[in-house]
Image (cartoon, rainbow, N blue to C red; front, side, top):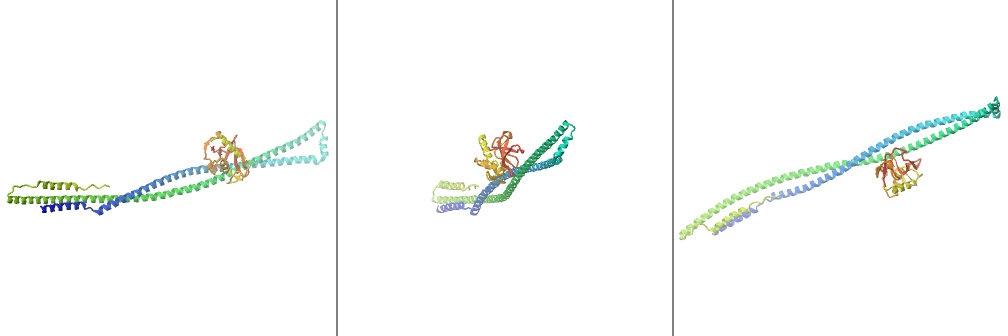
Length: 433
């Protein structure tokens, strides 16, 4: 009995030791790889988020570039229109100069003719005048000649006055054309400055766009590297898991073979013991035969229970009244100077600086350039224009004051003044309040 008990104890100890046998290197390697995959996946998710953010920012900049391109096209169109208007105005000025010179020449010619007549009439003194009268055949003839002389004087005087009026009108026309040309040139200068600014902004945005391209390229390279690393480590995990599965299957096969061998040995041992006990009983004269039922049940329980418990677990892996107030306020500065780049109502302002300063007095901020002001507020038709609205002419702005008039900082020659609202082609009317 003691020998059988010791054999049973050895079997149990061997089985416990078998359950404790684990490959630490493989398990640790898989765990580390799984952690690496998790870390790399987290990094990959971060990079993907960066790519998404960069694409979104780049798309926004792309839209800004498109808007800037559209503004540049509109700006260049305005510049071309103003250049054409300047050329036409120069042609008008040239034609006006010809008319002016012709009027002056005609006046001078008439003046010389009249001077010759007067000199002829009066150089001879009263005798010559009397001779003309006394050479008359009769009193009627004398009265006719006297009337003729008077009409001649009146004709000369009237003709001289008419030519003086013509010369004055031509001079005024020429002055007005020069003023309009000066204003067009001022508008062109402002538009060219706006163009230069837009070109700088556009260049900066394009540079930012290219920077995002570089960022995206770098981020995509990092994402590709993380993806490749994850694939590689996942493949290694699968390989190790497969090796682990095969190792466990091999161990399970060996365990079962060992169990079968031990069971066979145990059965053989029990059979030998039974035979030995039978012989002893026969020699002792007893009637005992068979096996110990409790021992058999215990042994069979050990075998079935051990096999069941040792199965390896699976692995897991606008208000109008305020507009009128603005218009009235702006009119207070009529006569103040025009200063390029200025924003002072008293010391001088250009067209957009004037409108900006006027609205600023009412707590309303406007952009600095005339072109930028052409996009503020909302557009209304000229027929709907109300006092306080801003009218944009392409490189020039003014404040509508009603009755078809605007107040604006015109040119250095005329300063801040009132002008007809339709003196130039209107591009847009903007309602701010």
